[in-house]
Amino acid sequence: MRMRKLLKLLPVMTAVVSLTSVAADVSVKSGNIYFTDSAGVAKQLTTSGRDSNPVLAADGRWIAFIRKVEGKKIATGADEVDPSALWQIRTDGKESTLLVRCRASENKIESLIAGFEKLQFSSNGKLIYFITPAWATSGAVHVVDTTNRKEHFVCAGSDLKVVPSGEYKDCILIQQHRYFIGGGSYDWYWLFRPDGTEVGPVGEDIQNFESAYLKN
Image (cartoon, one colour):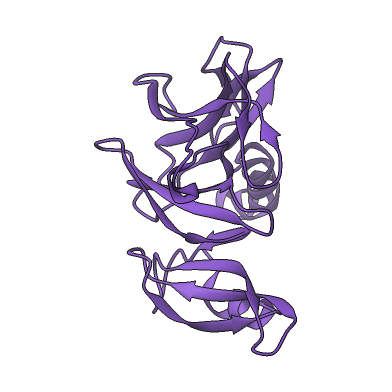
């Protein structure tokens, strides 16, 4: 009898678990970062009122986000941009750390940091890739090591995705604006290794590549 009752209750118990178990998530409210754990409990992590664009690392331990700062606009090859800074914080609210500040550059546009877009963690959460406005026809991909705050230019690019697993784990899929010999231009995706070495072209349509390599 007890076994029959348990079997009858099993679908109900399963439904309750599926309703109460949710994926961890990050969000923004009134310029502050919130973390919602797998139990659905939300916790406010920052209080500046100037934070946005949070991204959660794959291991669920760290969050990268952007904070508005005071200062002069920074000139790029196409526009002027309000300054900001890249930060990270643990999901328990500890170790809030400034990683990269915006900076102007009059000599090399590769040294320019005018903003932080398309934030992407490496699979181990150690590296954060981002795109900053740069040339008139393209942004610039940069990476920062979160353990020592060392940052450097990787290559030109207008979109990026880090491959989470498989044969090309931690390689970077980057959209680049390139030119045909004899005239004209095209915007294809190319695969790069973390050190910026080109692996090869993926093409304009990345659906097949995403299906094979961009599944967590």
